[in-house]
Structure formats: structure tokens, C-alpha cells
Length: 262
DNA sequence: ATGGCTACGATCCGTAGA
Image 1 (spheres, rainbow, N blue to C red):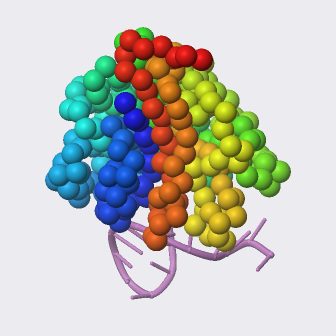
Image 2: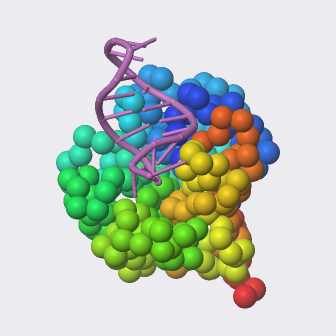
């Protein structure tokens, strides 16, 4: 199973690029963030024609998430159960033998702001949700835009970013607390090229300067980590005309029953 | 130099993203 996550920054604007990337990259499951449309504006039919079912949690203008899958998705659950929130940031579904949770974590705006406090409360609620889900589903993947660069090597210029939102110590602790329930960052299961990022600012030619952050991740339970054959970032869509500011993160899982050679 | 770009929705600017 080839699993991906991509913050598309408007599904309607990015649909041609998404369809092109689905055809090129041939993923089996794709978590999408920042749809920026309610369910009625979601291009379900076009994606079905491309071979993908959709589990959608949409919202007008902001947020919005979906899980695309070639195989049917079962037991879809929207949002974080028990955490009242107007913002549509989470959708979960089971595809084959894997429970997939797609997340669009809050941005946080600036350290100390109301939105930053919301971000930390939101992460605490997500952690409790993931602990419950992991107990019920040992084959769990949590993929999305976490809006946290976990380590300095995930930041193009750690000095310039020091203490800022996306890298502040409380955010990194909140991100790390997600792993402590029993998840691993698939990207770090493998040697990776230095300065590999998943987001680049639209401004100041940031992509050309590779001035980015690695804030999009695919977290895997122990059972799925053992099945993970590769992980990386596909920068190709970021090079197109009118791109999303994010590139897809990808992880390949071996079929059940096979074990890693490593 | 505290800007720079993109998307949205309601206008011709404000909000938000990261």
C-alpha cells in the first residue's frame, strides 16, 4: 500500500494537479488537507472517475480534510470524538487492514496567541484520541499536516526560526507526545537527504532557495513501521505552475505477512 | 527592509496560512 498525505491548499484550485499526481504517483491512499470547501463543493465525481473513493469532512473557506482510497473506505469518523471544535480538521477511515487518520493540525499563528493555545489544546486532544485508536487498531497510520517541524534538521534555517511558531519547544513536545502513544515518524525510519522539506513559502522564491520546513508527516504504529519499505517527500508537484505550497509525503507499506529485511 | 505570495469571500480590502 502506497500511502500519501498532501495539503493541497484548495481542492478546487488544485484538482488538475491532484489528478495528474494520482496518475503519475499511483498511490493507494491519500490524505488531503485544506480542502477549503464544504462537502457540496468537493469534486467527488471527478475523483471517482480517477478511481478513488472519498471520505470527506469539509468546511467553507477554511480547513477541510479527506481520505482518498482505491479500495472502499469503511467506518469513517469525522473530527476528534469528545473534543468540541467548529474546525473540520480530522477524518478517519479503515482501508483494507489499516486504520487511517488524516489530520490538519492548527497553524498556531504566533507563539502566545489564542490560536497557539488552541493548537496546544488540540494536540493534547489528538494524543488522547490516538491512544484510544491505537488500542483498537494496531495497524494505525496518522498522516497529515502537523504544522510542527519536529527537529532542527527539519528546518532550513534553525537560527532564524528559533522559538517561532512551528518549532517552539511546547509544539515540539506536543508533537513528540504523539509518538509516545506508540507511533513512529515513517520519514525517519530511513536515511534521508539533508534538507528535505515538505512546505515552502510562496514568497521570496522560497522553493528555489529550498527555504522550507518538514511539517507534513506520516506516523505509523509499530506493526506498520515494521512493514514500511520506504518513505520520502515527492517534490515534483511543487515545481508545477500554480502549485500548493506543500508537497506530498509518501510511505510504502508491504503487504501483511512480510517482514522487513533490515 | 518585519515586506515578499496565494486563496477565499466579499468587494476593490481583510483574514488566514506558515
